[in-house]
Length: 310
Image (cartoon, rainbow, N blue to C red; front, side, top):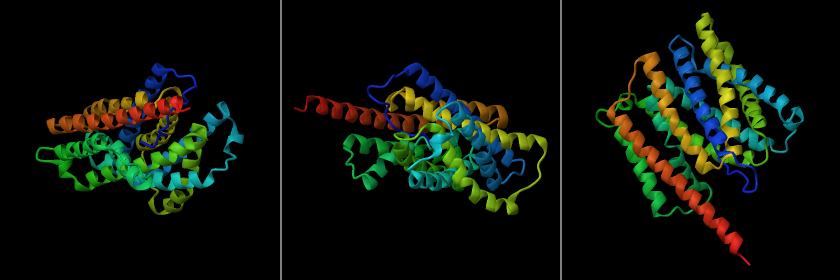
């Protein structure tokens, strides 16, 4: 999931119920997008096609949002290098995400994706020079134990090592992308971020299409188009949610995606997560929520110091 993780302005308007509602709807949209991609792959659509149409049909969603919002003039940006870096890492992350969802049951792939805040904590050490305390390190270790619970004896994800590796790699790179989008989110409207991600990645995918493009039946075309349209809407919803509510309120709504992916997996593929998946999901979610809570405490302590400073 590639949303900007930034706090809303402390003096800006907050609408918590709107923020939570937008995020929950975004999680539903993302789950449907991955289900469409997985279903189309089972009907012989390959990963290059899925990615190409995902970006192609997300583009008009972004352009429409620009017309309704800041206008096309917002595309004149001084932050081209940031957009390019976000697109490169975001594209690799998307490849791994789609592979994870194609190779694993929806619920298991979603649960592995919950490790993203854990990877973000690790990356903050190496790239931002942060020094997490014992509480956050304990949460990181506990989160990875949750992954082991899922992939251990009786865990469904353990039978597909490539799928597990793809899902973990996607979570790692999504954490990296979130650092870039955190910077972009402070200076760019959501539609601009979505537009440049699609526009900058499409040429690379278009070069590959002559070797991978295939004819499909109407149902598969519908799934491919839906993957792009729904994916574009989901990205806008993700970023809009953070406009109306703080990270500590909004991000816990991401765990609703396990409910959506479980329901879709059962309705379409008759897959129901095993006990180890539910147990691992609870451990990973608890660890990630604890990390978010500690981040919120740090933010409040920083504000207190600024207010009390002479």
